[in-house]
Image (cartoon, rainbow, N blue to C red; front, side):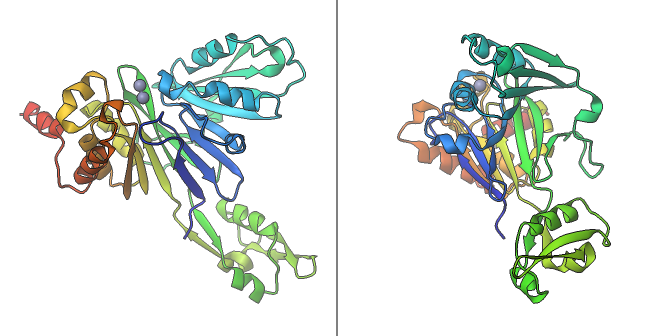
Amino acid sequence: MPSSFAPRLVNGPFGDPGLLVEMRWQGSAVLFDLGRNDGLPAGELLKVSHVFVSHTHMDHFIGFDRMLRLFLNRDKRLYLYGPEGIADCVAGKLKGYVWNLTESYTFTIDVTEVTSDGAKRAVFRASTGFEREDVDLLAAQLAAPDPRDPPGTPVLVDEGHFRVRAAITNHRIPCLAFAIDEPTHLNVDAEGVAKLGLAPGRWLKDLKDALREERPDDTPIRVELPGRIEGERSLGSLRPLVQITPGQKLGYIVDTRFIPENLAVLLPVMHKSDVLYCESPFLDVDRDQAAMRYHLTAAEAGTIGRMSRAGRLKVFHYSPRYQGRGDMLRQEAEAAFRGRKEAGAVADLESAAG
Ligand SMILES: [Zn+2]
Ligand SMILES: [Zn+2]
């Protein structure tokens, strides 16, 4: 069954990291990381409603300017999430330009900082020349915790058709890893619609919304009959038209180290991703380099994929030193993912544990 997520890496594996996830039926998209994005058509970027920035090293944030330029004269609110200090980084970027002609613009950037003790929010409006407004975040404004979730995996955003969770990892600075999932996947049986004497139309979206919101069976749903005639049916009578299956889950990990404190926060959030997108900058023989730069090796990426029980692993964010040898990184990650190779760090951790 097709998922509503259509994910793709913004650049090739040696380019700046970034993952665009289009929402197939919504006409919108979310973006993980803001590295260079010149390769993305403007129309694709303009679909983005939420941006999740892992951290603001240049290769993860230099694409902010293109985004700003495209969005500036549109009637849009862009939600941006990042680690502690992200609002200062956004403010700094915005201070680099002069804003004396934007009073009539409605574009707004809504920034949320994810910290170990909750979240902070700041709003920047084009109409005020992007003067920073700090907003007190009420607990109620954060997505309510779902009691079925494992501990340590708070939901950052819940938009109904997608949810995003974050893990704060140690990259010598806080660096966020993210997981996005669809709570449920709703598939309409087109033949069933016709058999009930109904015509497909916008009402199918209302039907799905009602099911997603778990409304009672006697909830009336406005339906469409052939010839554009309107009618009404109970939710209960329409329920068999929609097949409900668990949605897809994608994980996104960049710029982090294979150390117990990071694994402790990453594994619960990434648990059972259908596809795990994971950085893989170094070969395992160069793991001292990787550790010094607070990055993973390919074998470590594969191990995280295996430990978190990912369905598939896609590696990227290769160091330029392996230019022309990208296949080696991919193969090493895959071997560790399949359990055919052990990352050196695993043995190191085990011997350290005694
Ligand atoms: Zn970094
Ligand atoms: Zn990086």
